[in-house]
Image (cartoon, rainbow, N blue to C red):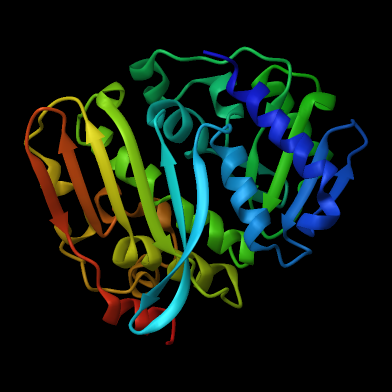
Length: 310
C-alpha cells in the first residue's frame, strides 16, 4: 500500500494551487510548515469542504453532494464512498489526535495519525505509514502557530517543513460539510468498536445533510452531530456475519430523540465524558456477502427540523 501521507500531500498541493478558486488561504510558519485556512478566518465553502474531506481520507474516498429534502426543505447532502474503509476512514480520516499547546486546542484527523500509529486500530489493521511529510487536519476556531507545527513534527517524526495543517472551525461552511462527510466513517468505527474485524468491512457509502452554519462552536458541534445521529444513512458491505449489527445506530441508545445541544449541556459540554455508544449513524443497511441483508435504525426529520430551525 502506498503512503497515505504521500497521497494526501498530492491533494494538499492541489488545494494550494487552487487556493483562490477554493476561497482558502495558505500561511507559511517560521519553521516552513504550511497552514491552510479552510474555514477559520474565512467562511469556507462546499468545494473546500469536499476537498478537505478527501485530504483527510488520503484520496481513498469519493466525495460528492446531492440535493435532498429534510422535513420538506431542500438541503445539500454529502455522500462519501470508499472501497478502502479501514485505511481511508480509520487509519486516516478519524479524528483521533488531540493537539494542545498553550491556548491552542484542536482535534486532529488525517493520515499524519498513521505516522504515529499508537491508537489500537492501527494494530488491528496492521498498518503504519512511513513518509517524510505529514498531513493533519485540525478542527479549531483559531489557526495553529509554530509551536503546534513543532509538536506535530516531533510526534510524527518529520521536519517542520514537511508539516501541512489544513484548519477549519466547526462553525463554518467547511465544518458543516466535513461533519456530514463522516457518516460512513462513524458507521465503520461503531462496527469495529463493537468487536467486528475492520478488515472484513469491504465497502461503505454514507450520506448526511449539511447542517446550517451555527453562530458559535458549541452550537455547531451540536447541530452537526444531530445531522449524523438523526439524518444520516449508511450502506455497508461486509464479509462475515455479526450478531450486533442492531447496535450500530443512534436509535440503539437510551438518549435517542434528545437533541445533542441538550446532551452536551448535560455534561457541561465536556463531550469527551460521553460514552461512545451515543454516537452512531441514524440508519444503516448491512449487506453480508453471501448472507443476509440487515436494515437497522431510522431517520428523524422532525428532530432535524428542530435542530436546524427549519
